[in-house]
Every structure is written in C-alpha cells, then in structure tokens.
Length: 284
Image (cartoon, rainbow, N blue to C red; front, side):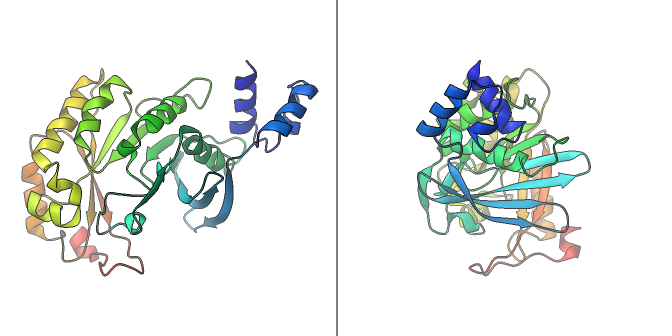
C-alpha cells in the first residue's frame, strides 16, 4: 500500500522529496528521507529542440551515464529509454557502442528514466508509448529489462498496453526465443540491410545470427501473441551503403512473406563517423 502511494507521488504527482508525500505518515517520511535517496540519477543535461522533443543525459549513482528522450507527435508522447551504459554490439553506424559496454542498468534505473521524462510533461499529460531503443542492447540485459517492461504495463504504474511498450533488438536470437515466457510487449528489429553480406559488415551480430535465423525467431515470438500484431523492422539508411534502389528491391523480396511494418530512418551523422545521411531522393 505504501509503495503504491510513493510510486504515485513520484510518477504522477511529480514529487521530488519524501516531504512532499503528504499522505504518508510524518514518521515514515522522516525514516525514508534518512535511509534512501528519492533519485538514483542526476540530470547532467536537458536539451530541448524546436520540434518539442527533449533529451536527458542522466548520471547514475551506481556509475555511468545514459540518455533518454521524449518525443511529441500529435497526441502521442513517446519516450525512448536506455538499458545499458554503453553497448557491446559494435554496429558501425551507432555512437552508443564506440566505447563498448560498461554495465547493465537495473530495473529501477530503467524505470527512473521513465519517471524523469514524465516530469518533463505538463501535469495533464501522460506518457503514451515507451520504446526500449536507447543506449545498449535490451536483450543482453534480459532480466532487468523484463522486470522494467512489466512494471511499465502494471495498472498501478502507467498501465500501458502491450501494444504501446516496444522492445527493440539488434537480433539476439536466443533471447528472442525466450521472450514469450516473460512478456507480450511489442517488438522492433534493427535490420538495416537486406542481405547477410552487407548486414555482417555493419552489424557484427549477423555473423552469429544471420537474417534467416533472426526472422524465424521473430516470427516465432509474434505467433505466440494472442493478438495479431506484427514486428517493426528498423532500417537506417546510410548514404552509399544501403540506400540504393537495388537494396530497396532486395528488402521488399526478403520481407514479401514476412508480415511487418518497415520504419525507414535516415542516418543521423555524428562527429566520430564517416557515414553520411542519404539524399532526399534516396529516402523517397
């Protein structure tokens, strides 16, 4: 009962101290204040863009930093949260993995990103969608991510539906095969190439789990769900790498009999990468 009260103060009531939680007994508030911190993170930077998106760089009391993002699109309030400090996947177009992996985030550190971003919204607004697509590979932090995802969908938390919580993976096949026993959240797959040769060049995980094995595993998870959902296939377009018409035709052939939604993402250049954003005509 008390835990639910505290949660509502943090997540909905926007309390930042135990003293503000006025329906808790004064003695309990004093004990909590003396024994545990309200926050396990410190906001290092808070960036806001003209399109309404907001990005927080958080420093964790257990060590390391990670980013989380709030996106506004019409009535949708989508957040993107991290699962690890750093990333071990080594995808050549991603800044998150440049320094390798530091550590997994625990479930509380994942959930706190959600609470921090909820505090960025006006009191009358709520987070509507959550994507595990920030720093790190969620399925390499399986237990903590499963715990966090299930909390996100708890009625006493934000009560988000299974359609509105998405786990994004670069293709950790054994973990995808385990998903059905732990969650029924939605799934997004970082594909980024229409064939094994090209995907292996830009995503080292493909050397271990090639595309055919990955799609087989994803289809198995989708078949286990009670409703008729399809996975989202993420495809980051990189100039001169995977943005030719031939790649588009090959991707269409690959996925012709694989029910899915395809999300085309133009590459976002960063200082330590030689890759470039594709032309507008290539994207179209």
